[in-house]
Each structure stands twice: as C-alpha cells, then as structure tokens.
Length: 474
View 1: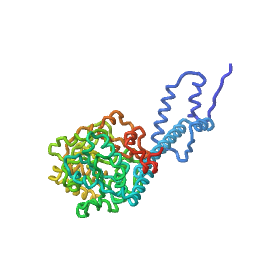
View 2: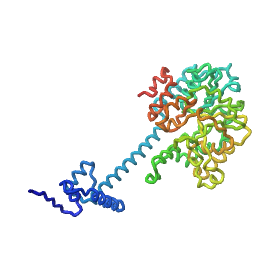
View 3: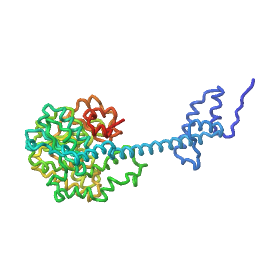
View 4: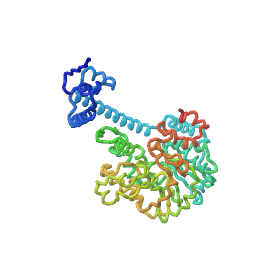
C-alpha cells in the first residue's frame, strides 16, 4: 500500500489543515472552522501589515496561495485588506456618482438653454412674439376673483409650458383659468415669446419679470439681497462641495442630503417670491402657488372650495408616510436643534408640510406678520453663518407659517418623483398633482425613465423651437 505524505514548511499552512480532508482521513471541519474564526477575530483587531501586496483578482489570490503557501493568518489579512480596499473604492465611486448627479441637476441642459436663446431672439425680431399678454380686453380678468388664479415663478420655459398645459388640459373649466407666470429679467423675453406664440386659449396667461413689479425694491426685500450677494453664502452654494468635507465620517445618504441643500436655486429671488404673494397680487383673494417641477393631472377647481378655517396655507403634510426621503419629515429633519434659538422656539416632533402646490388665502395672510417673521429668521440664520438650517426656503417658511397651515388631503399633491425610482405608479396615476421634487427632474437625463412619460405627455414636440433644439432627444 502506498501512502501520500504532505510535508509543509510552516506549522499554520492552510494545506496542512486541509490535507486530511483532501485525503479522506476523517472530518475535522468543525475544528477547522473554529480555528479559522479564531484567526479572523485576531486579524480583525490587529493592524494590517505594512507592505502587504494585494492581488488584483480572486484568481490571482488562489494562484499566489498555491505558489507562496500562505499561512492562515496571512491569508486572513489578505482577505481583510482586499475587502477594505473594495469597500473604499465602492464608497468613493458612490460619492463621485452623487457629485456628478448634483452637477447634472444644477446645470442647464443644452436643449433648454437653446430654447431660451432662440425664443429670446424671436422676441427681438418678431412683433407677434412681443404682443401684449394678455390682450387688452382680458386685463380685468387678472384681478377678477371669480377666476382660478395660479402663480408660477420659474426661469425654465419648458417646465413652465408643461405646468400650464397640464393645468389647462386637466381642467373642467379651462376658460376660468388665469396663470401669472413670474420669471427673472434674463428669461423674460424668451418666456413671453413662448406664451405669445403658443397660446393656451381659453385660459389666460400673464408673464411678468421680477423687474416689472414696483413693490420688489431693495427696501422691501433687503434680506434676500443679502442672501444673494453675501460672499460666504454664495461660496456655500456655488463653491467646492467636497473641500473640507470629512467623507470618511459621512454616509452617502447624508452627503446626498447636504448636496441637495446646496443647490444654487435656494438663493434665487424666484425661489423666495412666494413669501410676497399678498403684496405682488394685492387685488386677489386666493391663489394656488405651483413649483415648476409639477404636473397637474386633475381639475383643481375644488381647491378654492376648501374651507381653510381661517388659516393661510393649505398644504399636504409630509410626516405621515413610510418613505424616509419625502413623507416622514418633521422639524428635526430641517433644523439644527443644538442651536439655542431653534431649541427654544421649535418642537423637533412637529409635522412638516410641502411647498410645490399650495392654496393660499391672501385675505387671511394680509392680517398676519408672516413676511416679517420670515425675514427675521432669515436674518438670524445669516448672522449664525447658516448654523440654524441649511436647506433653502422651506425652513424659514415652516417657522413663518407656524399656526397658519391647514392640512389638505395627500391625494392633492404627491411628492418625491425626483427622489425615488420605486414610486408606486398607481399612486402616481391617482394624484391630482405630481411633484418631481429632488434631483432627478424629468427634463434631465438623470430623470427616472418610467416616471418621465407623465411629464413628457405635455411637451409640445411638434413645436418648431422644441424640435430644433432637440429637447430630450435620446
């Protein structure tokens, strides 16, 4: 009888431990596993040896095991070092992905930029593009409270066209719809051209630039001028978002939230305009204020019939859902409760509510000090170097409207289509207004493909300007 004898040069070699099993001489797998656990625990508490050369692949690891006859401890160190290297690479890749997504969300797509430029050029060369909006005979409608008045503040012409078109097409009484579209000075000509050349009759559309409101003076909005021009604030929103950040102590989700909070839109005057609605529209009693990343899928006339019970702001609450990104938000999610002023005046468990589709009672609003409260807290946050809150216009509004909000049914306003790829499609179909809040806007390449059609169905692809600018070409 011939016996195979294995002689190993080291007492702890894996071959020695595995040899008896390979030869069929007994089953000591239990002991082997216990020994290996012991080695793993030991390796987990020790520093990885300097100069440990790591293989580039699993097959290379197996090859080196055969050739170098690693002892069990070295093998365990190799596994640990390879896994830590892989985890680091995955983590760095995730942060890079989040940064790229942030830049994509903050940039203007080429097609939308083209649309604005071409329509601006049309304004200067085509008298029809400069025609008065609305026509003179319809001017009294702008202050007629028997109509349904919508306010939309945006510098995105394509997004504005979708909001207006979806509202008109979903309305049972489109002849009673009035849209007040507010834009900035650089976009005014292009925005005016679009609605002059693409009327949504029988609805009425007014386009105004912020420069055309006599009330919007430096004296009336000094805090917002400070927000836009303060170097520290501008650097926070436009500067290097990675410099100074300790990514090793930050989860990708926390980093994503911080990036979202540093969107340049949060220091735009257009984003703060909603706090001045009573002054901008002194003759109106009720308005629905809309964000530009929404789509209207149902007639909204019933919003004007909701009894707000003396409150100012009819809004969907965002603290009673299950998803963590959108519908489980309390004040603690927006404010720094380690700041003494925040801790003194606010309750971390108070329910938050959503901007994006709000019914405002301007008569009730004019009896309050909401605007003054908003300005006061903005000043405090500026003085504290943004240590009270980071994220945009909602936190000061949560404070200013405190006690002035009436919750409305969540079916009026479905949020999160720019955050969550797993959004329930049936819920989307049922919602009166769907909101692509978040980075993945439907007009961006990073938008979710299965949610985009709810938005693109209202894009006029037959329009020459849209076609020539190759809007959303695949």
